[in-house]
Length: 114
Image 1 (cartoon, rainbow, N blue to C red):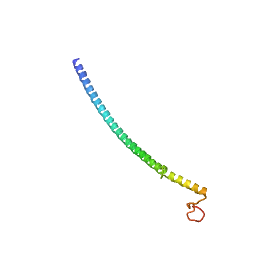
Image 2 (cartoon, helix red, strand yellow):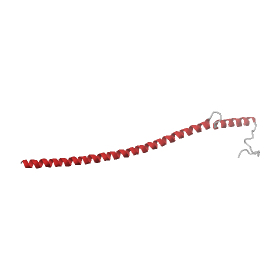
Image 3 (tube, rainbow, N blue to C red):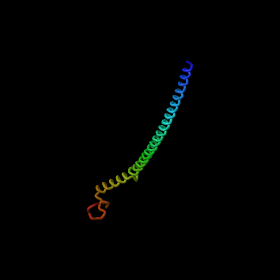
Image 4 (cartoon, rainbow, N blue to C red):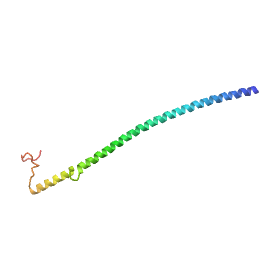
């Protein structure tokens, strides 16, 4: 009986050693896969972050250009809209008084602007 216990005992020890080795391999494989996935996710996030930064820079630039355009169009004294309003007022006043400032008939042929 002692012999069979010894055999069964050493058999269990060998099986346990094989199980531990197998578990260590599985553990190492899982750690390696987790590290690879971590690196992949870092690269994906950093790429997306770069895209977001570019988009936000573009949005800021568009906002600055829109503000500049508003200043050009709506400037108090020298804006396009203010100049057009002054021209329209002058033209209306000239039409009301019957005076022609010469702007409508630049070439003097009596047909106005073409």
